[in-house]
Image (tube, rainbow, N blue to C red; front, side):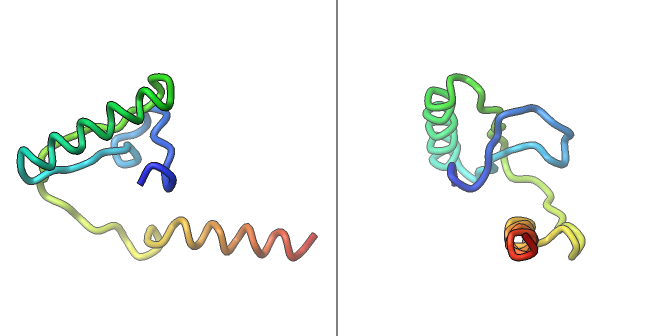
Length: 80
């Protein structure tokens, strides 16, 4: 998880970093993880910890963002 995203700034609500939990055990694990990441990142970690609520899947063009970005980067490198 910590290697796949960089929660280093507060942004728009739809782009924020968050961990959602369903019980107190998950909440504790999430809070401990965020605390450790804040220490590692010198306080520059803005991951919210919240209870699960309604979830809505994004449109198809928002899916697989990382894979699409890596593919595009690969295409740019090939063109050089």
